[in-house]
Length: 214
Image (cartoon, rainbow, N blue to C red; front, side, top):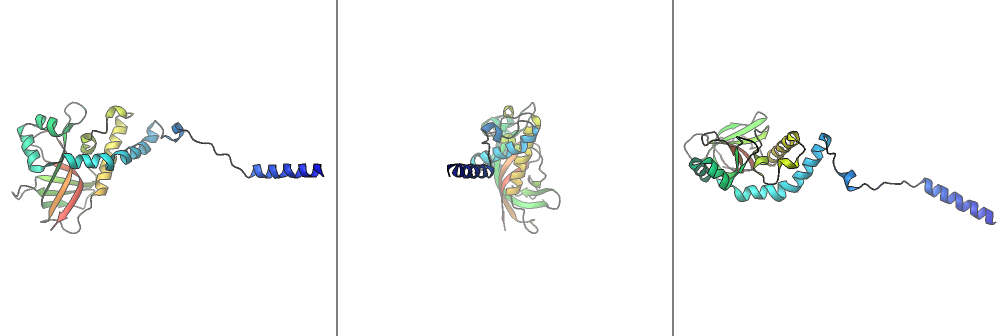
């Protein structure tokens, strides 16, 4: 009788073990994205989740100067304006990057191409003086370069840093609603960032908010 019970117990144990799956617990290093280019997308998405809504958007809203005020500051001296209100990009000859806000009448519109834009008249002279980039193709990396949260030395190389710039542009354009119908003659209010290399250059703004008014 004892031998039968022992045999049965062994069979139960054997079948029980065969139905079990041993799962290895991943360490923090194993869960982290790869350090090479194959992990760039995952690392950048994690960084955006940590910084876009919690940090970057509030910073832009807080530091955004009205269009007229920023124009006056730049006209008085770009270097001084940049040190007081902006952030320089990396490298020699890099643009100063500013947060800016304002509104103007839409006098130009290109909503058919992948580089969609609105041209605004913000000073009531009938001509476009601010161009809003609505994407999805966006020129420049002003969003990245204005931010105090992204330091080039924390990235693997220039390629990964460039990917961050494009990812920020993608997030910004996805958060801005494209106007319905013909926007010409309507008023657009915006908040965004701009890269300026000289006081005379045309203004190309990357907006993070856009509100259309009648």
